[in-house]
Amino acid sequence: MKIETVQRWVASVILIHVGSVPAVSLAVYSIGVADTDHARGVGLWIMSGVIGLLTVAGVRLIFQRTPLSPWLLLGLLPTAITGFAIF
Image (cartoon, rainbow, N blue to C red; front, top):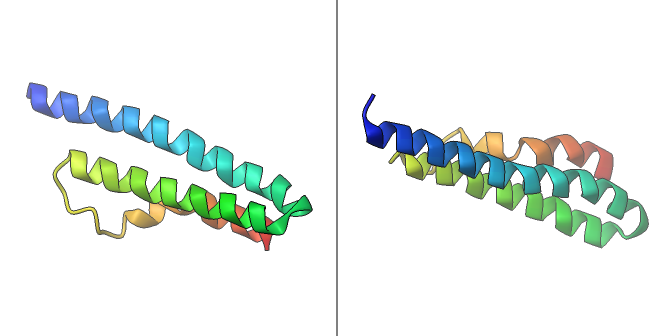
């Protein structure tokens, strides 16, 4: 395997970890916040979706692919799952 390929995989794994932890945390935290202040909960919920989208787009860019693809839906997965609890 080429060193560039290994570097891309390592960078993408780091980005996935750094991006998915805040996205999932905000999505879960937004459920509790939405109980007391719905507007703030929805704001946190939207932020989790944005972070998830940016994470998936960043991984796609690391591998020199176009960031616009159906894989972007994977970044919205925590937001979609917690959306049922907020609304």
